[in-house]
Length: 312
Image (tube, rainbow, N blue to C red):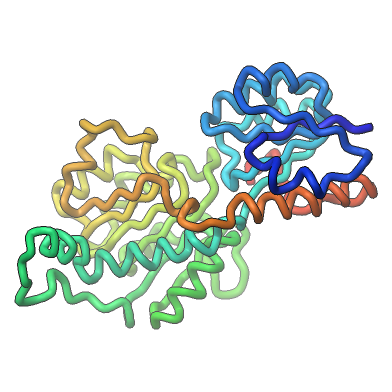
């Protein structure tokens, strides 16, 4: 029998589908996860607080496979998993559709000044003209990151007749390399971040990048707050050196109520909700786990495996 420690949150979705060779043990709290971790050969330690997850993973000394619903593995101790000789599978792509839709929503919101329309409705004020008159068609977007989310963003933006230029770690025909975008960032109306959080992407949008952007350009971040120098961004937005920012992610999270970003009229903050804006996340994650469970038992390679060296 193989022992698995699993979150009780997904129990209704997978318990009836588990094979007879697996012995599941369910946790509902950090304390229960820690108590069950040492004997788990298969672990799924997803908790709301990443430090709690990391603590449980560090105690899972017998673990050979760790699964997570999270797409980003920042906060997960990859070095520990590597030392354990375990494999890590994640939720990359599970929420890609809804996150790509969030990007389109954010771009349209800023292009049309829709936030001001909503506020006018709250005031019961009939506006005589739209707050903004920017069209997406004919604009130009730099898309940094071309995983499952990036690919879906590109498809949706092209449907709006936006010219999309992609930058990725491993460039191919028609795409830019990891640093090729820097001298060209001033060409774009939209700079969209869909990269994983790794040491290489930490602070990639720095003061120099912000200074080189068009004065009318908008930064869209659905990656991680760490990929942007947030102090530099606040300065750029305050001085109106860029047109605006649509930020689903910040540093830290939650963003403190007194943080200056909340007060900036050209900053739109959506509280890391993009991936949650659908009802199928747990169902998709459960399906992925069950499919990999069958592969695990047959000794076949698992799908959606994280490269522990690269961090995605």
